[in-house]
Figure 1 (spheres, helix red, strand yellow):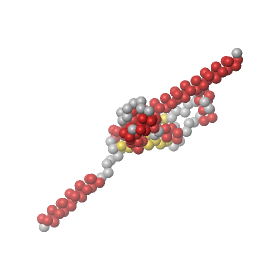
Figure 2: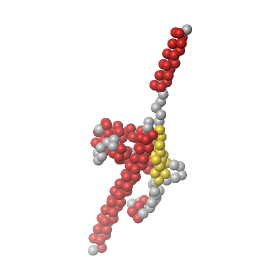
Figure 3: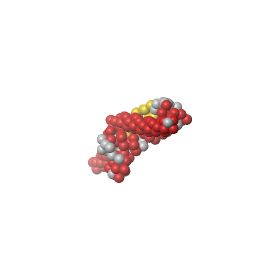
Length: 171
């Protein structure tokens, strides 16, 4: 009788331990939303943007999980050193691993019928998920500002060059 009780307790404990070992870790999801402003200005018109006033939301969606934005995100989170070139990241397993890990956690989706993109992060810790989602949104904003500034500088240089050419023709 005591052997049966001991075996029952033993099997019960083994089942409990086994179920705890096989229990999946809880995952937490959090979302940060960003609104994509669709603006038209003279620089956009001069650069051909007049014909494509609404940028593709799909392009913005994929940009969020692109290497340049993930690089900024990883830098802001302190997971890679600042100011590394893309080549340095690609050659270093640790840095590339940090970026790939972020990419596996981040999902960007367009809210149907809107100019809003949801950045959803899945992580084992709710605070980490929130931090990464908000940081990815800020990183995208920073990248977008840098990209637009570069484009505007290129347009300005083109206009100045054309102005010089026109002035020389007029003389």
